[in-house]
Image 1: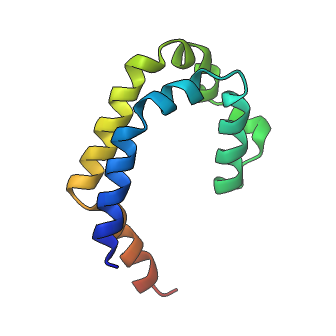
Image 2: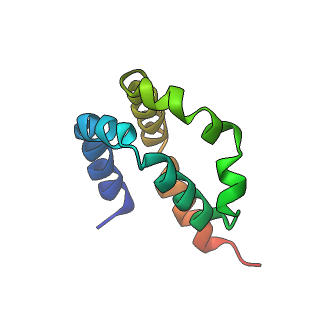
Length: 97
């Protein structure tokens, strides 16, 4: 299956996930999950992530998840329109070094 097909499935799931995303952000443990996830992907210690600007503003973000979900979806839709994920994924495997 072409990456573009996966991209199409991805954007449909994102659009449908709106209520789930809001509920997830509002959970008490969401900040901890965020810090662990960013740390796992970047290798940056969780303590550094917790002290970061985004983590320090988590309470406001959490309280206004309904406002931020539309921003999240619009950014994902913009990436989808330019096929950013599939293009970058292909480029990652074509780069040597």
